Length: 230
Image (tube, rainbow, N blue to C red):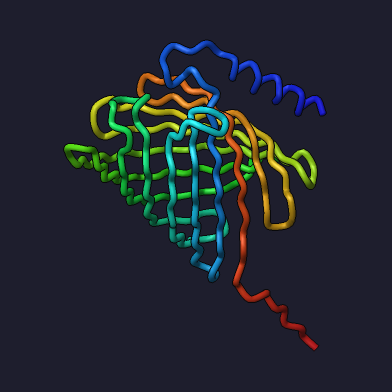
């Protein structure tokens, strides 16, 4: 219970930080939906969707949908190839264009391991971003690295921490960073829900966001059978 009180206090204090430009004037929100479908011992599919708002439930910012194919090298690591489509309202960010469309190709590597009671994940991702502005098209490329920690409080609840930095291959190299801390709950064996605070630095913006996510997993692999020796 003490951990939960500390977490709530941290979220509240961070969200109350003063703003300096229009996009920082609101406590915005990110709503995410993710899933993982294990098809075989080596392959899985990962659909993902996201809605972002400048306010908790209004003032549209971004819609994101993607599909990724993963190849599992072993129990701890995998590589993935995916496609994403984004519709972005960039008025508060860098121009007066209401919407920018983006088609994105991505490649990633994920490695999981444990440090004591902490579950650790490293994710490196390379993204090729095909942006459609009103008067031009543009190709941007970047690399992002995410470090994740997960700590089980009990069989039902866990704490989650993510730190992700972005390296842009164009101007303004270090243009984005995301820090997330929150709590998750196992609704059932294959369904989880998470909620927490996201500090999002992007270009000159310093954003405070509440993040709520739902995820689930399926597994189509046949159950492993044991051979009895009579």
